[in-house]
Image 1 (cartoon, rainbow, N blue to C red):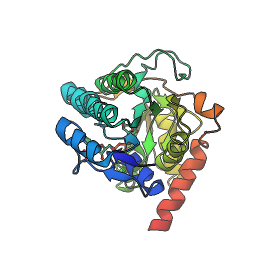
Image 2 (cartoon, rainbow, N blue to C red):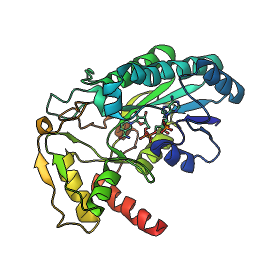
Image 3 (cartoon, rainbow, N blue to C red):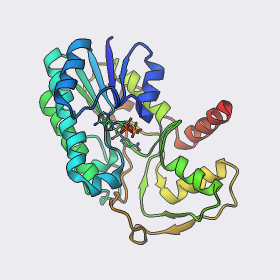
Image 4 (tube, rainbow, N blue to C red):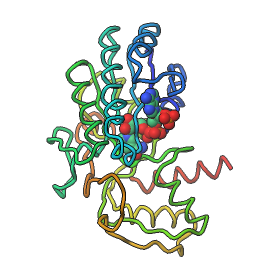
Length: 279
Ligand SMILES: NC(=O)c1ccc[n+]([C@@H]2O[C@H](COP(=O)([O-])OP(=O)(O)OC[C@H]3O[C@@H](n4cnc5c(N)ncnc54)[C@H](OP(=O)(O)O)[C@@H]3O)[C@@H](O)[C@H]2O)c1
C-alpha cells in the first residue's frame, strides 16, 4: 500500500515510519499542512492510498495562547489534507486526542460518546475530526492520550529531566488519563489500517492514573524512588490550558477486531529498556 505520513518528524510519526519503511514520511520542514497548495501537490504527486495525518500543533498551552493558530494547523491543515485525500481517492487516518472530551463525567469515554472539548487544543482537534468525517468517508479517527516517544518532548522526559537537574517537582493529582507508548500506538495503527474497518477508535495503553501517580511511577522506574514530588491540584497550577479532569479512553471497537495495547506499566518498562540499550 502506498502510504504518506504527515508530521513524520514527531513522536508518533517517527514510530510509524519505523514500522512502515516503505511509507513516505513528510516532516514539518518538508510539508506545512497549512499550505493548501503544497499539500495538494505532494499528495497529488505521490498518489497515496492512505494518508496517516500526524501533523498537529500539540503544545496545548500554546494552543490556549494562540487559539487561531491551533485552528489553522489542527483544523484548516486537516481540511487541506482531507481535500487532497478526496482528490486522489486516498483513505485518511487522523490522530486525535482524549481532549475532545471535557473530562467531567468521571468515567471512561467510549468512541461514540458526545464530544465536548474544554480548551482550544481540544476544540481544534474536535473540528479536525468533524472535517475528516465530512470530507473522507474512508477514514480512521484514532484517539489517544499522554503519548511518550523516544526522542520526544513529552511529560515523561520533562519529569526525568527536572529530577536529574535536582529541580523541585509539583504534579497534579486531579488530571487522570491513559499514558501511551508511541511504539505501541504505532503498532496498533499499523494493524488497524490494514483492516479497512473505517470508523472511530480509541488506542491507548491500558490503565488510567493521575499525572502525579504517573510521575511517581516514572521516577521509581528510573531508580529515583526517593525523589520528592509534591502533589498539587490543577487549581494550584497556573497554566494557560485547562486539561480535562478524567479523560480515560475506553477501547471497545479496536478490541473487537483484536487490537489492544498492553498495560502502561509494561509499556513504560519497555520504553526504559530501549532507552538504556541506546545509551
Ligand atoms: N503527544 C500526545 O500526548 C498526544 C496525545 C493525544 C493525541 N496526540 C495526537 O497525535 C498526533 C501526533 O502527535 P505527536 O505526539 O507525534 O506530537 P509531536 O511530536 O508534537 O508531532 C507533531 C508533529 O507535527 C508537526 N507540525 C506542527 N505543525 C505543523 C504544520 N503546520 N505542518 C506540518 N507539520 C506540523 C510538528 O513539527 P514541529 O515540531 O517541527 O513543529 C511535529 O513534528 C497529533 O495529531 C496529536 O494531536 C498526541
